[in-house]
Length: 297
Image 1 (cartoon, one colour):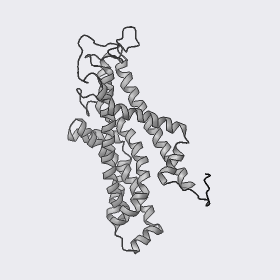
Image 2 (image 1 turned 90 degrees about the vertical axis):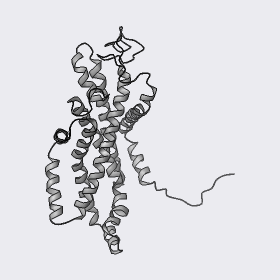
Image 3 (image 1 turned 90 degrees about the horizontal axis):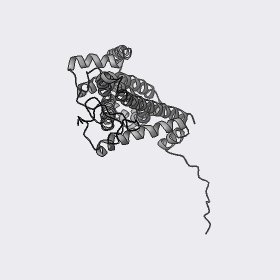
Image 4 (image 1 turned 60 degrees about the horizontal axis):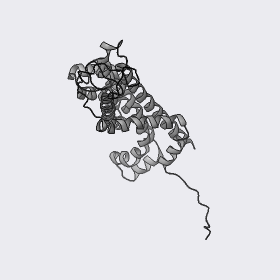
């Protein structure tokens, strides 16, 4: 029996579907998403599949080169470091620590930044002026410098480094939220909601927030790459994660003493940081372009 369509229906995709349709037209962005997905899978499943612990020292296998080298061993596919620790295992755990701590850091910054940005965007007078001036000053200061100052006050450690970088990233979310809220507050649908009796909290939660979710996702994605670089930098400087913790920046710092005889100890974690940051930036740029094109169509 033949199917007959008596009505010509025009299909309208959801905002998420329209964004994905625009995003997948950019092959570079899709490739970046594949790389990022691989890192996420490695961060989740890698430590569960690794045959060693990240701190296990194999005293009879110091500075073993990767398996494809003539002096390599299949027992340590990516070689070992100066203490005999398996590099593949440490990369698994290092990716998990660096990536997930960066995501948690951005979540903290996004939560605080959106809350402050809403206050700045909806308020007027002296309070709004004070927030804006402080924000402008912080936006001119590099996030890593702010993080170093905060770590110097709070003390070293991964938790303090995450808190410091989170606070350093807050101004960019405040700035974005403030500008978006101010623009939306002048639109007719917000004025209509206010006339219907909605207070400022209801206006934000039910009118403004749904429209800025995609913008937050884009900006949050790009902020994760900044957090990865800053957490790795603080770990390298021994201000963040400490020596015993398998973190990519710490791994680079540990490999400096043997860089001439075991360059893979620096190359592998450095390449992981580079590919992670590159893939996140590509995905973030692809999301931004897809969102812009979706809104213009």
